[in-house]
Image (cartoon, rainbow, N blue to C red; front, side):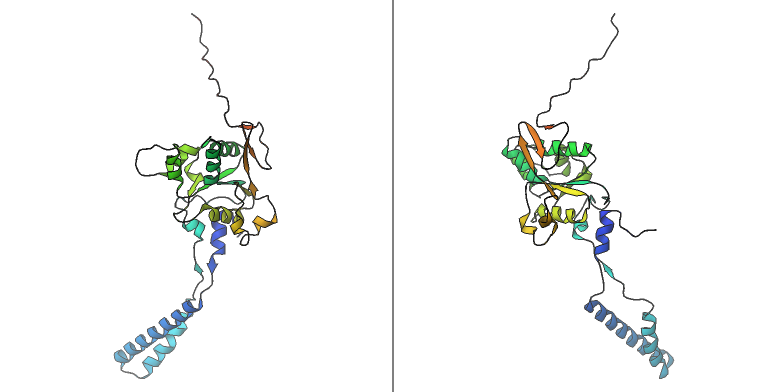
Length: 259
């Protein structure tokens, strides 16, 4: 039986196990001392014997040796903030396309094609066998609504709106908490996935000092360009080309018997 992690959740849980801190050890010793004193006083009053408290003071610390202070286990922040448990069961041997959703959507806005680049890219890579994980900044709902890609009437935002707008499933959509950027989540996820790349035009230069993978080569990132009516992915060739406005497939007429 192997202990090699198979999923991202197992890998992240493994690296977040930490030994007891000095204050945890000190607190444990203090609790043992107080417990020993309490038992010693109780033994003296119960047995009215001067040796009983001494026995209690000796026995309690000895018994505590059978219950060692275990390593504490803290959940990695990627998993702790993952409300829909998208990353927990992501297999490490699966090839994964990690989308910078807000970045690609803004590219579509600049080219007046809205949500189509992200929607079409995710669809084609999914067909090629890639697992899709798409990170969005928390303000994505407001950005979509302000640009006419969500209903203008009020109401509570819901992840299903993103699923409909970008053709994503619930297991592919990760909206980061308010007040933080998705960049950190994207780079951290990439750093733990052996077979993955980011779909983004951002180089994440603010994180180069912290993550060596951003400096070693450009293999971690595939930029997106729109050219000649097609969507092109850096160092990745689509066959056939990925068209921004693919022709609609004609629905074949039902063949009926002439009367």
